[in-house]
Image 1: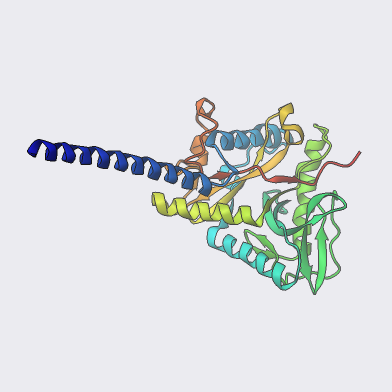
Image 2: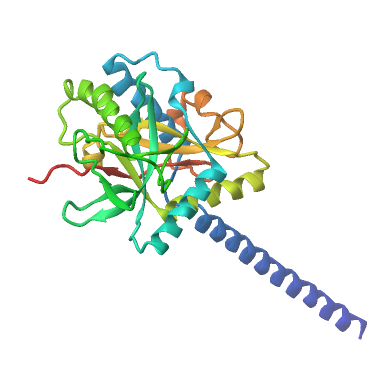
Length: 308
């Protein structure tokens, strides 16, 4: 009888171990699935981020006499909470004014001293030209901000009464945004166009509202999970490789986003800084590794190339 009891007990232990093992495996699989679902599709590896950053230095700044631009002047900082509030505001405006806001574009600009910047504008799809066109509203008037134009004309009267154009220095009027946009054309696109002929030159990068929200939520979760004080998003100009497989993105200007603390720009959950990464031999690293990355890219470049 004792032997039979021992046998049943042993069988019970085997079964318990089996089911616990299955449960552990299922739990691990679920956790991996959760991580995969929570990681935005446009998160890129640190190697890609460093490549974009260095390409910008070598193929743009160095080519137009701005090779001495400091790292500090390359970082365009947005407060994380303020950025989240701005995206939420666009959703509110879309509902209250019945405007089909599809997302927001980082529009390229430069100040009077030639320092590059970006500012955010809501976008709606231009069906005729087949691209995401930025706009703002002033004095009840809907004003488009056409990236397809080489320069924009200021309005006779302009004020940021709706607060739809968001910059690192607060909200801008249409005319203030126009001035930055035209400065970028004169100081960055025209000098480069004299050396490299392209069908079009990037003037903005678009993301959907869901992509913005997904990235912000991702940074907040990574901040809590890894005990990193992420307080903002830093935007950097980048340039894609000269690669025929990239088609229209080959040698194209873009921007990429990554996290920042109060002290520095960081590109992964270990707190690695972009500045230190770009100085190292990052090419040997696995370019597909994104599990620890905090960097966001692959936005839609604007304007589109001219139709043939």
